[in-house]
Length: 156
Image (cartoon, rainbow, N blue to C red; front, side):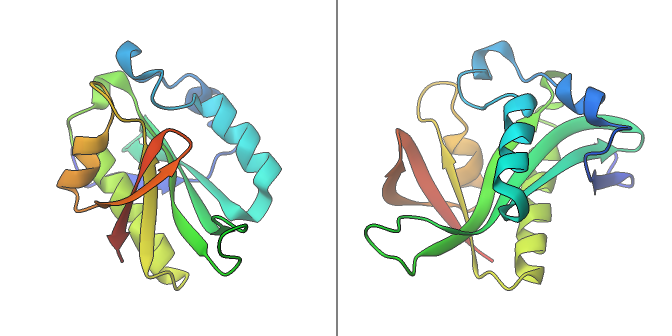
């Protein structure tokens, strides 16, 4: 990771094809939806979704999508509104280079700017799941499940 050219970019007609072509390691495909699914969900969820391409210089290295101020479990607690990281796809050739850490910090900063105090994430558990990555970044498991995924939270 060069660090000097790291940035997030809005998905536009100029970069959408590159974003759609982004691929994670084959053993991770069951852990994270493809970018196409995320962009469809971003369209459907409107302003509560925050999709961004991750660049290092001119090279697309990943994709993230945050969620902002959604009702988490309205049946149990109508006041429980949360924000966090919805998707993180780092290209197979770019993993282990700090781009995931950059992405989490960028979402943390965006949510801080919007007034959030906590950043949530959920992940598939298992051999190729990203749980250890999130724990190393300081996320603590809440004990909740989102479907079959563990839920973690990080103070902003």
